[in-house]
Image (tube, rainbow, N blue to C red; front, top):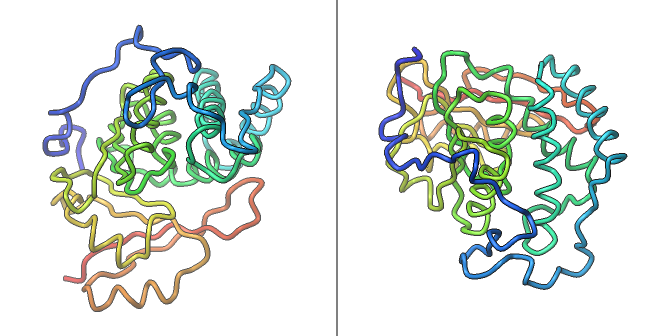
Length: 269
């Protein structure tokens, strides 16, 4: 895997985002998934009032984020840290009107979305130039990865239009030129990447069936699955597909007691 190696067609449909194309989260440029009107023209969902990200809350989140990054062995600039916190504020506002996540408490979002997503970053090779996040949902792990690895082209794909619209808006708002979103089914996505990753997307068998064609033909391209506890039955179901788990790594997510693991998947040759 070399830095000259690019994903086939990855940049062809990419629209660069200029620094001037920022979004006022409560302004007219924030639209529904259909793009018809400002999202805040829609009524808030019951019990979904957005949390006010006060300076005090931001400081609390920053301290927890810094401790989490240290626990993961990651270093981030002050700008990167602020982008990760801004992403939570953005998510909280959008989540008040459309269903993006059932987790609504900011510190829980930080741990279960941001830190959990960042646990994969140490295992992304420096030589990788492109990554596809399959079934990205609200942008995890795509968005935190894009923040931490600005030289990596990150694409989030999801079959739910409102979610990919949200990721596009978040990328614009946070100035993430390296993050794009694709609305569609991954099995119909005709692009290959150095790394294809999933987090809580589907079973390993379904992940392989739907996304294996998006893995670059290069020998060192990776297919990575982020899972909870060791998925014994899912691993067994790979055998008829002639795929296997080549490597497994236990992940320790700071402030999260639940089990996590990362699986490297490869075809049986």
